[in-house]
Amino acid sequence: MEELTASLEKLRVASENPSPEPLDELINYIHQQEDSTTVCEELVAGGVLPLIAASINSSSVEAQGKGAELVAELAKVESCRLGCVTSGLVPILVEKMSSTTTGVALQACRALGNICYEHDGGRVSVMESGGAAQLLHLLQRAASLPNTPDDHQLRLVATGFLLNLLNSYDTVQDQSMEAELVDVLCQYLDKFAEDEDIPTHVLLSLTCMADTEVGRGLVVSRDITPQLVRVLKINESAEVTETCLELVTNLAETECVKTQLAVGGVCEAVVEVVRRHRNNPASDLSPPIIKTATDLIVLILVGDESMGIIYGDGSGSVYQELVGWLTSDLEDLQIAGALAMGNFARSDAHCIKMVESGIADKLLKVLSSHNSGEGDIRLQHAILSALRNLSIARQNKPVLVQQGALDVLLPMATAIQTFPVVFKLLATLRMIIDGQTEAAVKVGSNNEVVERLVIWCGTMDHPGVQGESSRLLAWTIKNCGENTDVITALINAGCVPPLVLMLGSEHAVMVNEAALALVLVFSSVVDPEVVEKTKLPQVATYVLNNPNLPPEILANVLSMLTAIAGKDSGIECLKKDELKTAIETLSAHANEQVKTLSAALKEKL
Image (cartoon, rainbow, N blue to C red):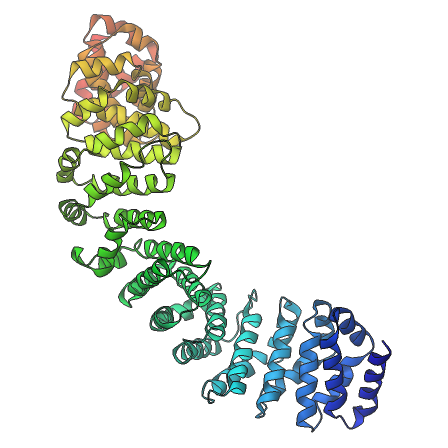
């Protein structure tokens, strides 16, 4: 403390004619201490800040530089930053950023950067003092300086200061200045793409800008794709690569950017990053880099236009690479490949061509190794999503059946417990059996699968699974070619109550599917006990009284009731006053088919 007091006194004595020596002594003293925090706090409490301000304002260039350097050391301590602001140092340091002496400008930048670090008060003071404009001018000037160690350090410190200034600071500044800033940052990425620290600062600064509405608009309108591609291609630092991928992912959330990235070759560069880190892992960052990179490609493919560009009519280089990922020994690549196939399969034209080229067969082969309860859940979900999309095109359905899709999928119905996977599985099965009689019979004849479907129809833990189970039962009945053995087996397994509940769905399409399935059920077999165990009259009354249902669905519901009423054993179940009133009301319906069906049914009842 004596030494510290002596150094402080020297600085006080020299304040009228500042020199760098007392400042340098204090800097060295701070560096020598194990507990520099306490020393810095003692200095601030001892009144060092006004003395430093006098040194920075002096005519001595050396004293200016050392004064700014001492502020930079003090501002490393969180508790000292506010004092640096309240003592009026920020405007003085902002002015010194324009110094033509590199050392002074560098230390002023460094000091301001430390004052702003995780300190909103510092950021506000810098902005109010015109620091943003001065920093922009300094960045512009430093970009053209030669690549000497001192000039490189100035660029590094200036970009670091910018990052600290922008980080978590939401106040929107002059838009024209921000636009200039984006241009300067692109210039830095062009010139210093191979560096490690400068690109990191620049990319993180762009990320901060992209987190505000105005800043994001400027970054997007500038289209920084060429700079991002350049960094991904030539910078070998894992940290820089990861930071760049995170920025691209951030920007890709905007729809138009997906197209920019697809056109600009980002996916090709990302594929190369994956290849580089898969074949020669650089560090512990390689696995997360591969994960971020693959997630990014899948995100870009969410855009319709960008997906079409990457697909390239089935011959795009990135598309071909993603197909290859399906058979990779890395699960992250397999999952990304499957998710990508699901995104490519969003149009019938793509679906048909992909199935013709063997994509569905590849997916089924991969899934066959993961179709048990021990299989990778993420991979199961991704492959089922892709298979579901591929099976929408009508001409693909028989091909998938021939390729053994049901042999792979049906065992999953009795082995998988994870509801999100079950949901995708049921939707995929429903798509595949549409119009495929043999496939529907195979599903309906599998007692274990049907039993599980009936159980899932009653689950309250996942409404999607509950709905898809009922729909799959309905579609099985609809597509089984009126096979009485299958329909009887389904009735005996307890499928009628779930279909009756489905009839009361708030979704018109599900009401219609349930009505059509029940028409077939009750046209084939009617057991009064089966009907009596349900709330069919009440549900039918609710449906017929729904003013929003289209006439064709009402007609199907009436046809279902007519099928029941056609059997002596079933008509008694329908003789409920509220149901008869609803039918009578519909006998005056504007639609001729509804009117005819309801009048005939009224007569029977």
